[in-house]
Length: 315
Image 1 (cartoon, rainbow, N blue to C red):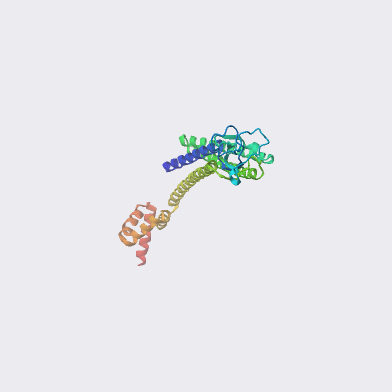
Image 2: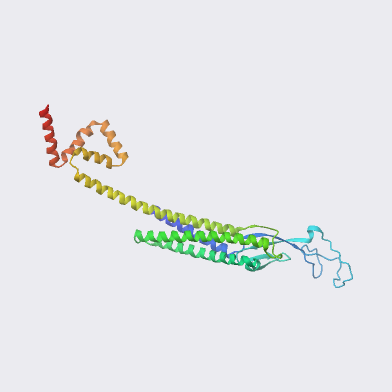
């Protein structure tokens, strides 16, 4: 029983640690959403040495002469370039024009002004989520390492469960807030940021995996708590039952009542076995029971003997 409880405790602690690791990874990375942005190719600058696919070339080398008509060879979709971008709670990064390196800017500045409050709430909720999750983890680890009384362990267990459940709820709210804020930024955000296509990325999956692990940890902790409480209640009930049986046996006078009491007090399987034995082998009923009755105090024995005499007289 103790081993099972310890195994459950270490499982809850492991799940809590995984949730914490995933949450910190998700918060510090900027890959919650990924996509592409359609941008018009800029004009090429500098000497034209080779075919440059990321800018529009002129047919003339003399760019300063405004009287010359410039011909652009790119038409339709060739005029555009798809630049990849990825965005997180803190930053949004986009590929440079020449597709080498990235340019990052704060996501708070990109979001519409009326959405910034929601984003700040989201950041606060994420930080609280991590804080409560780590508090729950610390309480769980104290309980695992602590070899004190069971009552202290139960108290730690209860607090760990409360903190973990609260952190899970905060995490869920934070993730949903960010989802809403990002979608609103896509539709109402600045033109120089609006994506052509986008989807959720690995940081977003990590965030929800963290929430799942957190809830699994809290469920395991609550399960352990209730199981321990039920075990205590069951043990207490058994002790009370045994005391009542002893009391009744002391109070009873008739040996038949003692036998009935014994049959009703033992578990059902044992009672059935005894009844089977008594029906199949009459020896049990003839010897054992009467031996037990003979072992009873003298008062019962005399009472029984007196009854026997009366029966004989009647015959």
